[in-house]
Length: 230
Image (cartoon, rainbow, N blue to C red):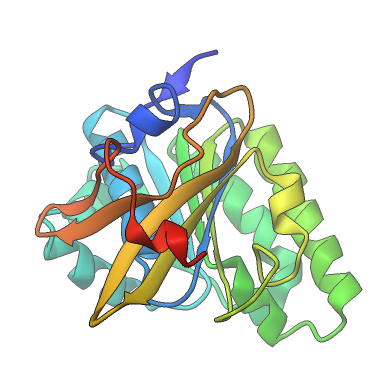
């Protein structure tokens, strides 16, 4: 099984060296856990390895994404001009055109990495839960055909039991990484766990991570105190 390094220090140690090539990985957690940052870091690392990348935003304006990325030294505007990246915001109100947008963007630059951030936004415009699930299923089936190694993000509500907003994403994807941001005594701590990862002997512990000036850093040899609260 060929592995795709994530570019997240410490994370690859938990998953046998990286994501399985061509897999779709769900990053899920509450607001403020760093899911978008992780996905951008994954995309930027790929660009440095000559793996072009596409970032589809359903919520955040792209100019804000680029400005945020520059805080960590990731110049996506330059990468776009060089034909190595495409970053685009798509209004999920026109959900019927999403598949075409994703497909054309990936093929235009022969992208090897893809990020869709965040799938939860679909629920803002599609009221019927069964229709939301059908849309997500169709989108992901088409993503698999593209052969990209893909990150999909989803919001979890506080105290939510299921791993994703609509309760279907985690069953379709190859891997799920859950991000936690929880109060421990007098401070808030961040941690993550690899909930599942197909074709992979992965860690089953909850590991701390930090958001640094260089992005996300995971501590694979440590276990978070959050483990006693989850």
